[in-house]
Length: 179
Image 1: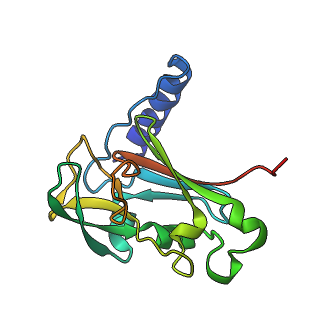
Image 2 (image 1 turned 180 degrees about the vertical axis):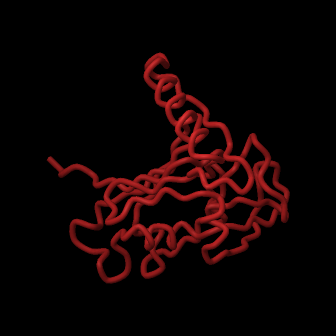
Image 3 (image 1 turned 180 degrees about the horizontal axis):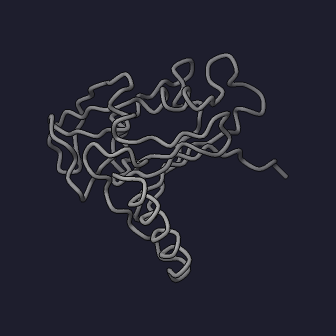
């Protein structure tokens, strides 16, 4: 996408966000194939905020998992592990995950406003090591627009309540102090 088009779309998105009624989530248009437009942001309590395009995600180490979808059918998903994205953003993992860092949570948010939360410890291989995948393909095909372009897949969960379709951001937050 050319620079002028990116500026125009960015401006239109900013205007739409300002003009939107409070409390109504705005769906994002999927990025065009081969586009360098960011489709996923990793932000919050991170050393380096990430704004990743589809091409950026394809260039990272890839993982495949097989999991049962909402309909009970086994499907093969491919993408990047959430732990590797958190590591790339400089989130404390491994031996750094202790003390106050144990109050960090990860919130995955969809373009329609749906959110799911995880403790950082459950995503770390030194603790529970749940494999969570930021998937961009299902059964070797790109995700359909109702589920993609990205979907958070949590194979170990018995219910798919934390499987976030139309994933747009990952935010690392610190829980407040206990009173």
